[in-house]
Length: 523
Image (cartoon, rainbow, N blue to C red; front, side, top):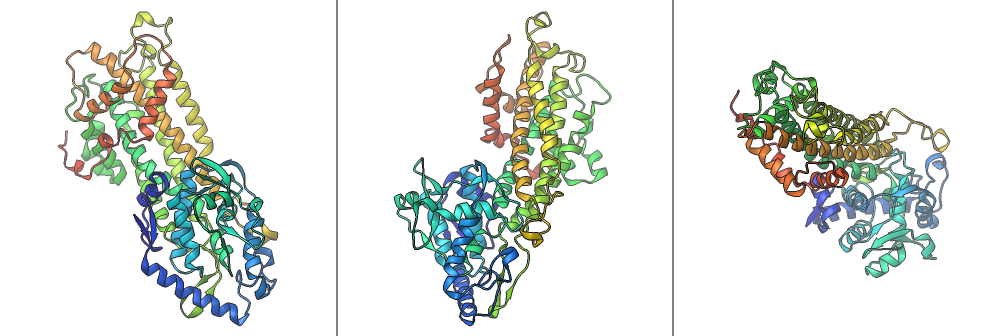
């Protein structure tokens, strides 16, 4: 059970609820804070003094006063008019993550919503009601207005209670109207009160949800990148000296030191390293700690930003002690947009250097005596193409990543009659980072697949040689799923199987970085 209070939600808890159906509940202390803030809001409404978002219009209409009798209609109109997203639906795991993050944000107690609003979101999560939310249309600046409004259509209503205005939601494996999904789950749709429409749809919550899942996945992927590197290093009999801890301590970057330590731990016990007696290797091997390490350092920064964001009060205005109401810009998605741009760049570089190792493994002039394209034997070259084409796929994905990782957060167009004259573009940054992550996972799967074949051929040439203790386990786990095949074959489905192993974390127990690896022996 994940208990939310607005302050302590972790990225790992988000994954548990979003992907694995973990139940969620509201902490007792959060309930008390929310009730106190709601009393402040009720007092403001009773005085009729103008306060943005409570009894005024929104955006360019902020100076328009709204009568108290129309407060519920104001909130409902906001949701109806803002649900204009487009594009393919977001994955259910992203929507579930966003629902939990939004509930946690509101539970923090600065938004003035009734407990009923947060409890309904949690009830939907626990019952498995997941709104259909289009993926495109959000600028991530006045928050994710569009996707949050699509989410809100499902659990909010008005006097007319029209099914046509209830959006759509998945329940029990079916796509239904929002009204029907809630009814089948035995959940009541609610009428929003003063400020509650704005509180529900104001905040970069979908950006944060995508980011939270991406950060956790990227951490596993960077560990795996070191594993793929270690296998490739052994396959070409690479130089151990480039990973010597003394060298990396001399520069002092934490991530770089971790990668070097990790690769030495993974290859510990190998007699393939240094077997070629080269002085040094190409950059894709020798400089991998510097590249993968920079990605680790970037990811550590991004994690901190996103951990803060999922526990932040992000709507506008916010209500403080004694009923003070402050209008500001906490909804603006710039921190997430920049962080996702950084993450996309980091993952693009990890994929790019991996593709260079794939190329090196398949090039008969660069792979330390293995057959060209890793055909079964030199005599088979020509009749068989070997692993020529998987490298094409990796190159294509890397090129796509290089486009997708061009920063999105530097782009802005004004909206709402220039009232919102600088927008974050953070939703686009988050979606692009998620795609870069998926592409990089496939590139690393190709490297694992290619390195395993290269090791098969290397061990045939050097019988009796040993892999590292951990790299041997990675190799064996992969070969248990996709055995070696000598001639040309349909490589695609086998690579897809390896990619599934990567994305499902089936190598994670072997490749996870442990801090105690700092204690391994220096070469």
